[in-house]
Structure formats: structure tokens, C-alpha cells
Length: 110
Length: 120
Image (cartoon, rainbow over all chains, first blue to last red; front, side):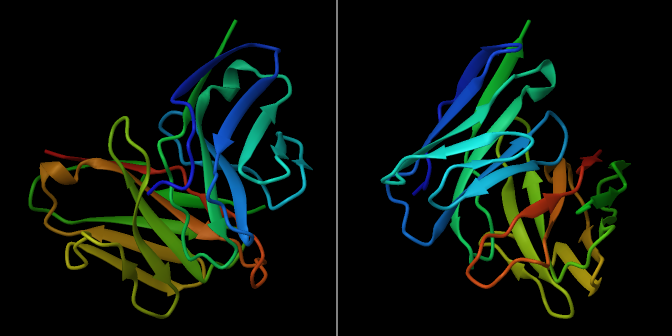
């Protein structure tokens, strides 16, 4: 069974914030939330990860709810180059692999 | 840092031939690398986990005799598709797990740009 649920697709206007939700209601205490994205015909790109606290880096912010059952990836000022498939992955730190779901296809438009 | 390269970026071959794809970690040593396959409009599917100096671990349904993996050094893993057929045409992507991952802590994987294989 999939550990995460994401919307199939989303649109966002360029310059606006893109908020990508992810549900992971069965997440366990030692599982991290990872976000990757894949631009068409390229390998996936690591974006950010978190355990309990909200995280921010130069690419994005990750907001994790207090019960950890869902999270939101925020791209503060989306550009056309952010058009990609975004994958939310839940795995333990000791997991030997990352399992990719179907992700959210984000289309940034003018 | 944390750059992973793949070679070739694309390859076209005739049915029945073998194709080797290289995956290199350019600025770090990776004891563990991963090989994925992605068909058009589908997600990445893990094929196998490659461990330096030992045999690869294959996912269920992946033929180990068809997809040969060698991880002879800490910066290079190779995937050889033997006796390729048109149904093996796909986008093959490798990744390397960062070596600074701590036990129980998070680990990021950095991915190569992918290799598009077309078997005629």
C-alpha cells in the first residue's frame, strides 16, 4: 500500500507560491518525509526532508503538521522552471531504498 | 557537491545486443547506489540496490541475469542490459546514497541525469 497520497496535478501562476500537499496518515515516529522533483526527461532532484519540525532551505519550505499525518511543500515564488513532477516520500532513516509514488505534476504558467 | 553522472545519456541498439550504462559519483564515495527504470508517464521503479564489493540486491520481478550490476569501486556502478529487446526500452536512472548519512538519521539520494535506451 502507498504510504503517501498526493494530488495528481496542480497549476500555479508564475511568481506565486506553490503549495503542494501530501498525506501520510500512517507515518511512524521514525519515518522522515522527503521531497524530490523530476523535470521532464531528467533524473529526480532532492529538494528537502523533515522529521517533525518545519524546514526551510534555498529551494523550498516544508511544513509538517503537528500530528505528522500530512505535510506541505512550499515553493515561495514559483517560476516556469519549477514545472515538474513532485514526489513526497516517507521512509525511515535506516531504509535501504526510497519508493516513489505517482507524485504531483505541477504546471507553472505565465 | 553530490553530483552523479551517467553515461551514455542515450543509446540505440539492435535487439539481442547488450548495453552497458555507467553511473559515477563525481565528488563523493558511494557504497550504495540504486538503479531505477522509468517507462513513459510512469513513476520510477527501483530495479536493484548496488553495494560496493558485494552482490546487488534485486527487487522482486527483476531478472538478475538480464540486468547485470557491478559496483567495483566506490565511485562507479554499471548496469548491463543483456540481450536487450524492444520491451527493455526505457529511461534508466541511477542514484547514490550520500556517505554522510548517520545511523537512524535521514539520507538523501542524488540522482544521475538518466540514460534513455531504445532497442530496435
